[in-house]
Image 1 (cartoon, rainbow, N blue to C red):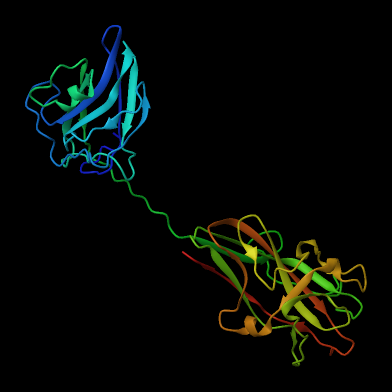
Image 2 (spheres, one colour; image 1 turned 120 degrees about the horizontal axis):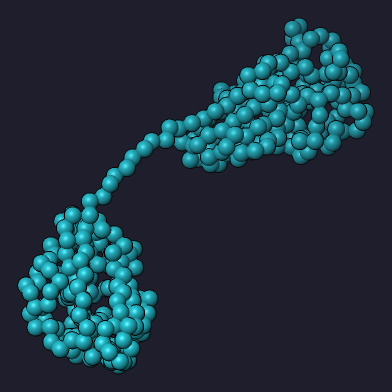
Length: 347
């Protein structure tokens, strides 16, 4: 039985036996009679409560030792008659096996009561007619006989819980929990120049979740602003490369490990090739990396999505690569901004 659950429908019953007659004997019919009382031929045989062979739709498959046997139309809800109009010669000790039903949308209906024993009386006949003339009290002239005990059984219900989890940390330095200050400019003086592009990749986040639909990482904030009010122009919502001598402030994101990936427009090409410090190639765009800073979206309530995962994710390490360029007319001052980053799980 593919399932011992009481009252379960479409259960696959797998049958196997060895022939006992000496020599080679023709077999044209097999009877399987299901009884509540015992497996002994001619004894009283009532059907187990609610048991049903589902004979009209029941299939027989995976026949070994026999072939082309079918569920005979004379079968009942209690008794299966499996026949072949052309008897097959089976030598003594031949293993015969087959499946009744597939256990999914076809099969036998188990008895209604749990922890109850019931029985199958099995007979082989030399002809199909011998099998179809079988009755409980008068089995007829059969070749081999066997009895099988079966049982339904109570099921153990096991429960455990998995808590929703979401972890997120923003940091600079080597690991989560270290300082969160980024210096963007010459690595010695923190001063920007019109003839160099300055980048910084010391901003990081780690993110993980078991959310079935993943997670989103959001950023919010404004462009670099001096205490006197002037700003350095944000790059905008379309990712683009560096342009020395033109005011630009923006960032891109690259990730490793896990399943969290950068979201447009912060998924610019070659972001992972950046380093912290002055672009040593002078007026050449640093590694052709692309950056963005969508001021409208980043200043909106909740900010703008910069990375996401569509399903559960192990710990992902994200790197925030910032860029700054100034123009000859950019007013002097100390320019700062504070950005916030949040993660939202989708459970």
